[in-house]
Length: 97
Image 1 (cartoon, rainbow, N blue to C red):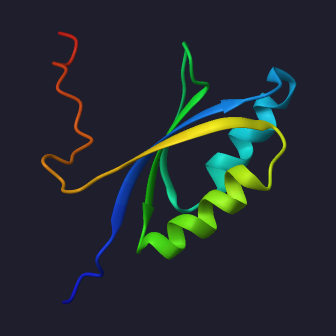
Image 2: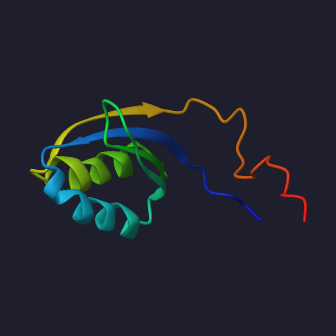
């Protein structure tokens, strides 16, 4: 089996109007390239974990999600150069019963 190369990145997103919050959540949750989406407190409104095949797909995705949407005030992307650790396990001991 040959695995396709992928490009991982994290996008920090700030929106213009909190009235559009639910529509942004729906939009982000329906996008297959967004692997994880967090609504956060602080300077940014959302943290997105993106996975695409290459920079061309990344460019198309940012145009679709951010540039074509007037409700996105700004965004910042951090592109991964290599994966050091990947996992979604939760290291929390279960409550004793």
